[in-house]
Length: 171
Image 1 (cartoon, rainbow, N blue to C red):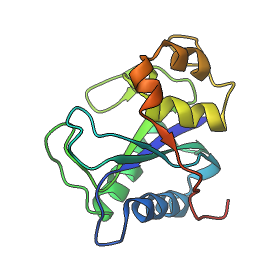
Image 2: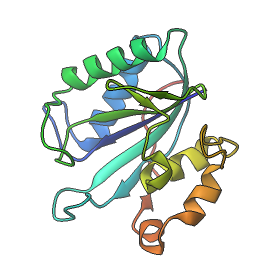
Image 3: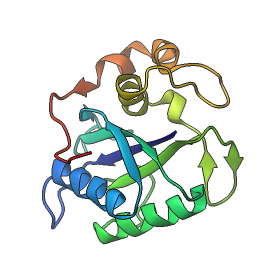
Image 4: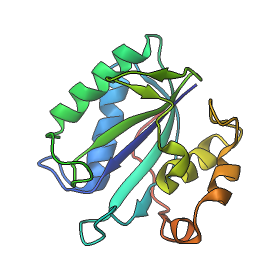
């Protein structure tokens, strides 16, 4: 299985943060990325500057017949189509699509690191995974999402809000 995380903290010419993520999911589908499950939306403060707009994130469980390099290429095209531009690290963005886990593969290169190097530290990654794939295990740490959530700081565990709103797609 493949785990993706999609986030947005800026409106775009396409609409709100919710709409940016929904459009991105639909563009993934158009590119033959099979969406199996999608989490609810989760909202978190911007990091490290909490004065910036809050982030919305979702987790996606997917399948894809091609390799991780082709998936990454598709993701970059989708991000560009939605208006993402390269900015400084942690700056607000219209859309961000991360490959969290690609079929358990471990890869470390200049273009792509999988599993995502900081996934185990991020509440907005772990809570959606727990929701859609509670049996998932981190490929390197060999720990499930609940275990990793329990290791987060108290602040990190309480500053995330699960919104009872779903992506508007048919899977």
